[in-house]
Length: 168
Image (cartoon, one colour):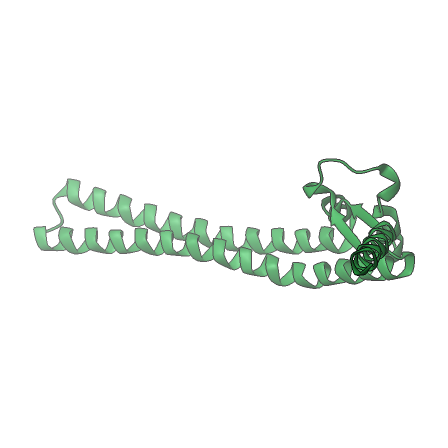
């Protein structure tokens, strides 16, 4: 008798668990497509491009200064105007300029990456808020990114709901 009560209780618990699993609602969206359509992203890319252009001009100026200095050293060496010590000093100066250029290029890449992250953070937060609002409003337990899905029914795509929430 105790066995059948335990078995009945266990079956009842499984039925409740199965009913709870069936009640969950899942959705997905294509976050890359949403990002690419957002006006904020387009503005951010424009700002980032302007910064990159500004930094590249500075880098090009450094390269031109290096090339002029290098040409000056070559010309003076060919004319015999440099003592061995002067030549050594000028070569050391050229090496330092090369190192400065390489350091600037690395710094430029780091600066651009940091600026992109800084500008994208509020956009990511805006999208996350919209996703959370759509999930709560429509009863979704989970919303996945389409990039990680191998298969999903189109009816579970919430991209348009999120776009609408973002005002797109």
